Image 1: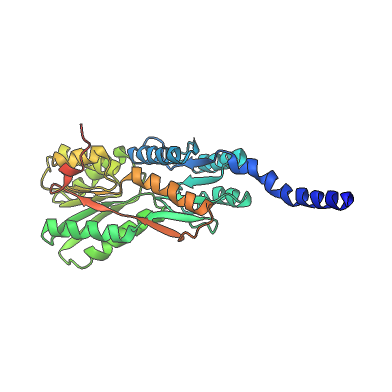
Image 2: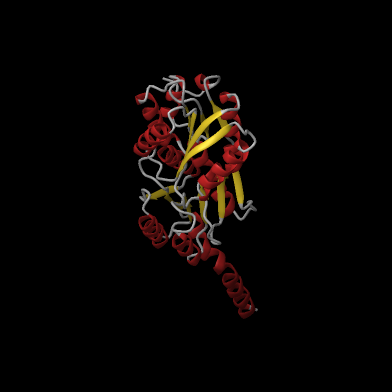
Length: 310
């Protein structure tokens, strides 16, 4: 009888062993990795703030690596995160193809990698927390066409040529502008999302087209630079500039009537949404491959409600 009880006890211990072995891991604090496309861009600074705030609410730690528009640096940074054993990675890829090795490294380690804002063509992208890029481009174009009264010359300062986000935005914009025969796109240029480039190319576009009516820009940094070029050419009120992202300096420029419009994507909330999507995935719940964040056009009619409270 005693022997039989010992056998039963041993069986119970063996059955419980896997659960006991897993319990310490289940109690470990989750650490996630973050690799954003730019380190000093106000949009990404705000996004990282949102990521850190939401992760803290969940009791998670965040490790951020630098990329700053350097593809190799971004790949190496993600590989470092993989080596650290993070539970998930949030990434805004510099290029849709050029940093695929980062996604490959995460997949090889069975670590989910969620693209936030910019997306990747990699089959190893777990989820893309995106904006409805083409629709935003359409909305900017419709707003611009209405403001111009359906006629005028337009310049387009696009984003990096390798990023599909900016191609989709531009496609949506040109799709709508094609419906207005008296609006002509007379200048197009790809390039980095910097204020310096915005100044230079706005100046170039205005020299080539002195009667330029509008400048479309891929983000607020480029828009703020383009605004400087417009002001320097004494074209305030004659050449309107549209931006995108709704960062505080752009909102102030809209308030001062230097920029005509921007699109609020709320990078803080975008970062928070990225963390929530990753949390849902880690719990084993179903998540769509693409999750969209809401957007809103900000111009003189509603900018006061969006300005940071002092």
